[in-house]
Image (tube, rainbow, N blue to C red; front, side):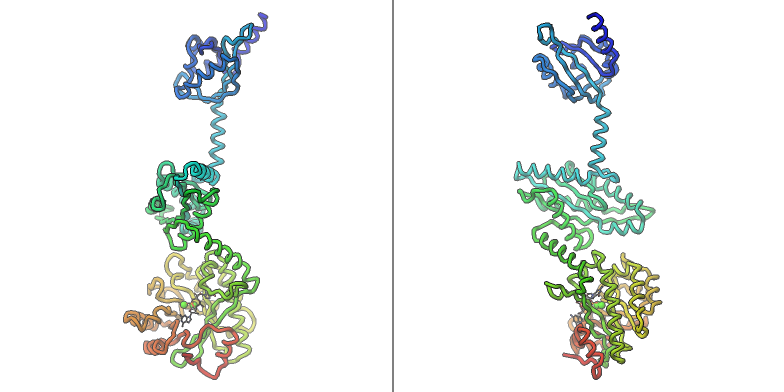
Length: 567
Ligand code: C2E
Ligand code: CA
Ligand code: CA
């Protein structure tokens, strides 16, 4: 017995875990060396004192509870809690308390074994943090965000008056920054944005990064749509001042979409995110720095858009595209000078879809690149067919519209080369129409690219002239051959004196710069007369012909003479 006791004593004395004994009132009766190390109190300082010595004030109610259980003879195992050291620091511990029983089985005291689990807890916290935060910006990630939206939904089920909102943020041209400055600069920009977003929220708002340049914000306790918009605007303002990056001042703008969680509209966090995303697309379509709150019809539109996109992806291989050809004529003589190729989509169920209804989507998704390549090839093929079947067709020029996205791609030169390469296209005169906005402003097209296209023998025309920047200086900077005066000016020529003057000065300017002028949308003889009087040489419009099927166009080609005004 003596020996056994001595063995236990030496084990307890040399144990790594802090072990102490206490009375049923919580007075410390024994204190091992590990307890001295863990808590910082020596045996003399501890024994005879209450264990409340090591219990932090916020945990004080634990003690009576623990003692009550000991008195009932219960064992408390691996109880995780916080304890206090002599120096005032806290540690996280796992405690096992066992009652000490007398011969008759009645509890007379207790032993407590305490293990320091602060390190383990910290590791757990780190792991949890990593799992729930974005590595680049340290903002909450999608998982944490979704979890918090779930909690907001749960709160709403308990309290129907509670409203919250999800904002979906997207940079207006992050891709451009990433592409032109590199990924490292892109990363730095994202971190800066994250810092600003964090600062822009109210306490309680949760800013998260879902990935890429997509950020979300959970707004708790909003009063209604105005409140959500105010928050969105505040966030947009936080990014108003430029971000210094690589010696430059970068202006970032955000499109913001919002979904308002109100009176049980939503069941799942994904649905809120989806609707805020849909609203964000709406905001983006309206231009940079816009804000949009989701409403139900938007969902239908987004659905229709998605459907159209699926169809559009298949349209090329299913051969659903056709080109119409609108004659370009000499205004004075009515003689045919060329055709503009205009795209139509023959949709199996929706009929013929006009370019205005699908080109923006094709641009946005990049589908315009393969579609545009097809247009180029098809227009050249058609020109060759005419050339072979009708000798009169040889001087006829064919115009093809290029989109900004196509010009942004070096591949366009290859597409044009290939379209022109086919045998029999020696006499083929191709013209490319590009809009003003592609030459000036952000989407600035490389002059080299235009020069390369020129070397292939194609002519370059500025389309819709007057609707964009109307900066005239750029006309000299680029290797251009013609400008097409936008039909809105031609239409208003009769109505407003200023429009008349504008058209006259455009024609004068073009003549000075040795550029040909083509008036678009000529519909009336009066318009034609005025244009002739100004010295405008070429025109196109319903007065002469609408866009025609190839079979009808050949009639114009082979017809007895000039394309006569049809009205
Ligand atoms: P745009 O280049 O300005 O094309 C001229 C548009 O004016 C055509 O519309 C044509 O049908 C219309 N138009 C012609 N004469 C008159 C007229 O006298 N009065 C009026 N009010 N309109 C007239 P469309 O075919 O609907 O094409 C619309 C736009 O779609 C084109 O504008 C062009 O920007 C774009 N587009 C058409 N085909 C292509 C293409 O193959 N590629 C690209 N990237 N864009 C295309
Ligand atoms: Ca055009
Ligand atoms: Ca045009």
